[in-house]
Image 1 (cartoon, rainbow over the protein chains, first blue to last red):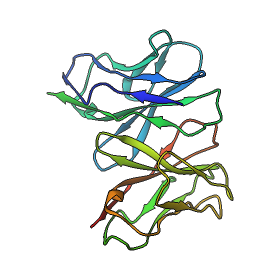
Image 2: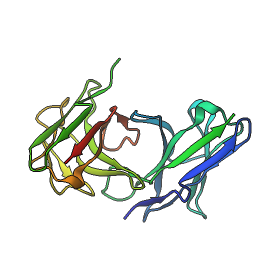
Image 3: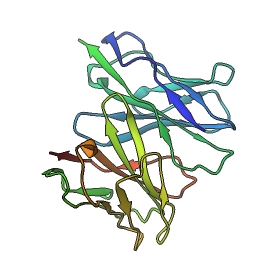
Length: 115
Length: 113
C-alpha cells in the first residue's frame, strides 16, 4: 500500500522568510513523489516531481523539494515566501514498482504567509 | 485554453436522486480520474480510466459509477445520492497511466440534502 502524511494542517510564515511544508511517505517499492498547490475555489496545479536523480528538485514559482530516502520525506521549501504563496499544498506519491498507477494524496497543508 | 471542463460547477440535490457529473478534456490524454476532496482527508480516488473503454475502482468507489466511451469524456454518476456524498469532486487527466503529472478541472461542488 502507498500512503502520504502531511503532519501540519497549517503553516504560518512571515513574508520574506523561508518556508517548509513537510511530507513523509510510505511505499513498498521506489517512490514517485509530487507536490501540488490549490488556490481557493480552483483545481490542483502541479508544482514539481521527483522520480530519480538529484535529491533536490526545483519546480514552479521558486519552490523546491528535497527527497530524503532514509527519512522517507519529501519536504517542500522556498527560500523567501510571498503573500501570494498562501494556498493549500498537497503532497502525493505513487509506488513505481507496483501495479497501482493512480496517485495517493496527503490531507493537505494550508500555508499562510503574513505580510 | 486547453484543459479539463467540469459541469456543473455547483449543485444541490435531494437524497435518493440520480446525478451525473460531467468531465471533458481536450488534451487527448489517455488516463482520467475522479477524486473527491473532503476537509481533513485530502483527495481520495473514486474511479479511474487508463484508456478509453476501460475503468477501474479507486479507494472510495461505492455509490459511484463511471464510463469511458471515448478519450475525451469521463462522466461520474451517483445512482442514488446520499448526504455522505456531499463533497467537492475533481476530474483529472494525465497523458498516460504512467505519467504522474495530473491536470485538474476546477471542481464540482455537490451538496446532498
